[in-house]
Length: 281
Image (cartoon, rainbow, N blue to C red; front, top):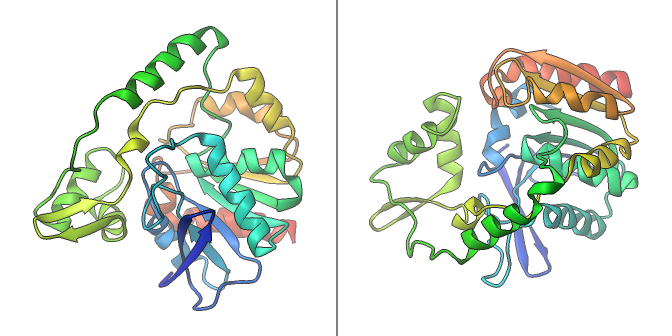
């Protein structure tokens, strides 16, 4: 993935990376996780040569625009962004590869707009982040308080690209090699050093969570074939099991590694994806 693309969408500019200078007519859409960027798919792209991969960056991430000062980052707004992009580009029956949050967004898209999703690959992602209905008032309070809390006037600055990568490394399960990929794409160099591009508001608390019943209903509405590639040491090694019965056409594969297994164990993850795509074709 060495070619950049831009999409203008309702005043937002969405950035993407692909292996082709020209935009694929019907790409395999890759959706990254929270606070990651399109570079998280670079190791996997090297193992999936020949496929028309397009790694899109959600608003607030990577080189995509931040939402306006009067807006917030609602989970379902990312679903709307994808629907608008598909309508603009006249895409239907897409294959989508989603990691973590990207997998959840793709699942919600497949549930609500089944004509847009032909098949779905979830990388260490299964189901949704949920909360019991009884916690709704407390969650709303936490979310609003975090939004009203004064934000730092400037984001943290690092003396070098490596220092920025090392800061990201402290919050992750990969090595400096993978952290550098994210930093090279996800930082901007200014006069006083390197700063991460991601919108600081992404760290604010959500004002709502799906209830378990809502999440089950969304999953049950997914009609397309789904492959879940779950990491042995990932975030979904336990909770993913509880969501499996609600998918109608689910295959799941365990791979070694942690939550970013598509970066650290790209070859193994690619084999699972290729087998799934071959079986579905």
